[in-house]
Amino acid sequence: MDREQISRIAHAEHPVKSPLDDASVHRLLARGLPRGDERVLDLGCGGGEWLLRALEARPEASATGVDLSEDALAQAREGARARGVAERLALHRQPAAEFVSAEPFDLVLSVGAAHAFGGLLPTLAAAREHLAPGGRVVIGDGFWERTPSPEAVGMLGDFADLATTLDRVVADGWTPVDGHISTRQELDAYEWACWGTLAAWALDHPDDPGSAEALATAHLRRSEWLRAYRDTWGFLTLVLRRTPDGR
Image (tube, rainbow, N blue to C red):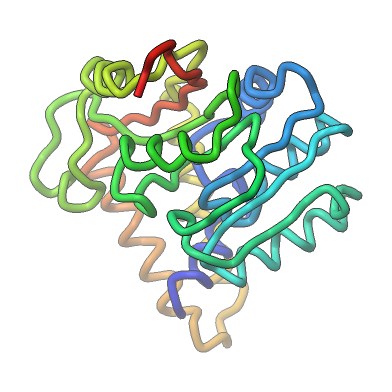
């Protein structure tokens, strides 16, 4: 099985693809869409769940998603048709860092996709290029709640602690106007959903050629979570505005 297949199955019960519950996503989108008629861009949209929820909540909004995965974009198209918002959604298959638009956006989203740009600050630099005056950015990325093991850093990346992460964002010319630190319940629910769903799929499809690999992957990822990073890794989602005279 390739990475996209595993991801699609694992996230079937948690389509946001980040450790946030429905209420948290709703609140953050509400903070990012104060008028209701905004143009929204998601850089690294995956299956488009953030965009679909934004369009459902704001009938006058329009949205654009960018992602490299045709499989994920197909899910976004299918979801948009099922929810009746397809006419307000445009999707582009290309690297998010290469996306160009003639018009700016009132809200730029990038939650759990900073790896596509090489980190949090490069992601914010990309968002800045697309942001309309007075616009907002909703961005989510990891941080270390306490000193991680070398194994955890190797798995997840070289994050900073929470305070340092905020200091870097502010120094980069942004002002946080809201935010959310994923709770232990949200973090655990996300991991259980991903690896439990993948394991259940494998058990339900014993004759599928990918069943054994899916089950082994579920066991491995669950073990990595519990043994390597559960007690050290956190997830932060920020609502940002440009600081006056910020870069």
